[in-house]
Length: 182
Image (cartoon, rainbow, N blue to C red; front, side):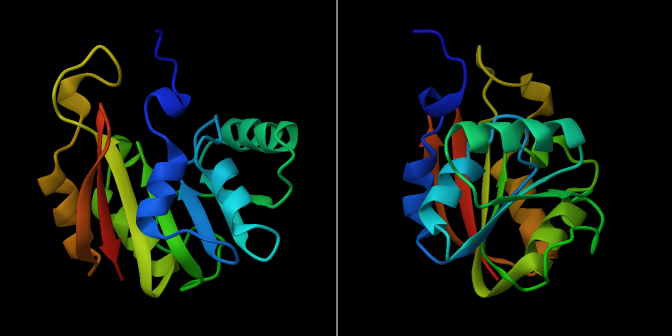
């Protein structure tokens, strides 16, 4: 079986179940990329009464995510062009998210602490910040091992953003997940 992304690598619905994403909530995929793999299913879950934001610094990624949402019949994804490494740059109301997601993005950041601080700024008190990253072992899938970040680095960035760790979990054969509470 060829691994091309999608649910072969990580099943978003399994992840959302872990963090308690449900109808009526507000969520954002910070660094959504081009596939909409997380925000489109999340938008389905939160429904018309909820909010689903696709956030990326690349306008082409947002356009691709919008196309994916339309093709999948999902109409409640709002695109937000922003640099999530700049505190206050994301045009989503502060303290408005129930769940902020950073999936396969933190390892790319120049300033992980700022990225986590931005996620925390957007999240409601008692809300969730979910981080999913590549395991540090070298594998045939994913970025080179030298670019991957360990759980300790994620935890340090979360601590700097005054987030409390709630749980850790296996997010798939190549990924780990950490869930933090604001």
